[in-house]
Length: 318
Image (tube, rainbow, N blue to C red):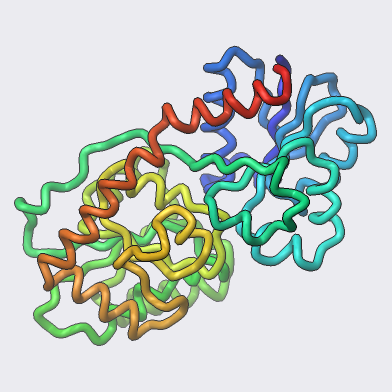
């Protein structure tokens, strides 16, 4: 089948939506379909549309439904959709009504949707290829912490840097932050933070392969987001068996579970500082994070995501 996959983010940017869209295109091609990835629906004939982002892809969604009222339309919900836009934007709400199927990326997303939408909603966890993580028995002098996320407000990107300012002098924590600056003020603050905080280094955007290498070499990765639909970084960490420290938000709890020991209070610098230092200094606690993340790795297995998309397309009589 000919499928158009729409993602509103510029494809030249190496962000989560792009990574997701390209991974799904690969999965759909593996299943035998012809896939075109675009920023906007181009009116060309196709057999189905998959639109990432209910609000930002609304014009594509509306146009496709006008031209093809009988064809399958799949709308994928992002964090800003779930935790902001569908509450107040008519375009996002309308996208959900027009959709044949809605895809959410973690199970807690269902609580944000009206029960009338549940029958056509499917949860598909984002997958990642396995990689070899750093051997914790062979650590050097540093305790490597990675932060992977662009500099924009929703990611609360400098929270980890702030949390390391007043760690004890004997702490071995060092932070590497990977991500493009999408906010000039946050870029200025990141540069100022590097100048005053020897534990923090912002290294900008890197290729996906290099980013995965740094993630895999980390002792922990920290996800400080205020809002997520899910997280490619989380999936990558679980696949690489790297322990995660995460803000307690539904978009992360929907994958990690409500009882995960590695949460900190969202936006709380002191809470994050305490859990970072505990991960470094308390071996039993660190192993508990490792154990839970390892047990969750099957959730992000590529075969599981492929099977979920195959099932969804079969429901739509592909």
